[in-house]
Length: 408
Ligand SMILES: [Mg+2]
Image 1 (cartoon, rainbow, N blue to C red):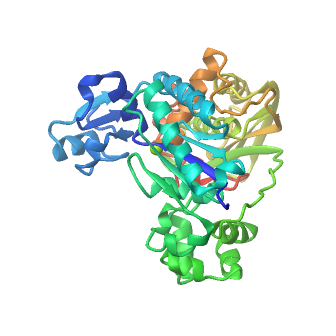
Image 2: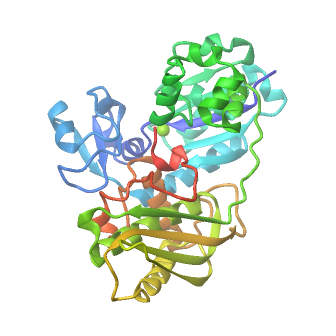
Image 3: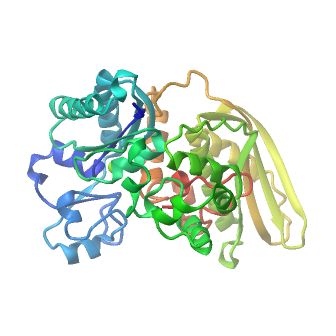
């Protein structure tokens, strides 16, 4: 009776939606792209395309080389968001959905009765049938069932497509031996490096490590939590109360003109706004910081009607940018901070259920694409020239979040 979490991950989600809506694509290798261009990358690949080694991030030209017959299809974010709503509802009719983690992932809690293995497995099959019947047979998902959400998510990755994997507490840790530690949520390339330096390369090593070792690897409490999660414990993580969030960037020589710097500043704001929405917060104050080569700096702030809307925030940013001193030394560093953070009112279960107007729909569709597939797949035009600078990791007031940083 140790099963508590039920995790659903849709397989090749965007490609599956396209195959559902366009029967002529079914059974064929399909690559979904943000724009129709040979230089862009696939943001999703159907299982038929995956068989050719094509995956998220494969360039279109490369995909055609590996699979000359591949169908390249342009992404339709609003359609994927609609499907998402429908899927959440259909799943919710079978078992209450606790949290929507991304456009194709959700987690549910099993009740006492459902914590029995056979009951949980029946429920999983029932959820899959309900999806096929109500949304379509192309909408396959992998379901993971485990003592906590962390292990349930991992379980959902072990069998694809159309998987159903149960990990019982009694089967730990042996059940996970052989699984790549890369697959663990929150373990990105930098953490792998830290773990490797501590002699941890495999799941066996990870389970053999002491709590103190993991504390050392994660630099604190998060290591202790990882130790417990791996053992099937339910770990309570207190919500962090942030007062501000922001990003800054040291300008490369070619980005020091006001025009190039302005593009980067807009991009920093778009990143911060994405985080704001991810954390279901609104901001009541925007700060712009400019540091110059001669060590002088300028900063100014603007009070806002609390908002999480990128276009609204960009408008305020433009006002601040216009106030900057015109006679100034070359710029060295730029930064944007969203302050006076508050909870978004009327916040509901689902990240997407709130899209009650067009603007929110737009923000959410952009977040969904950017969070899941490539950091800058879509963005507002002003940041265009800054697309390749200001890497995600340069930040000064937040702890990198693997889901948002695209770390894995
Ligand atoms: Mg998926």
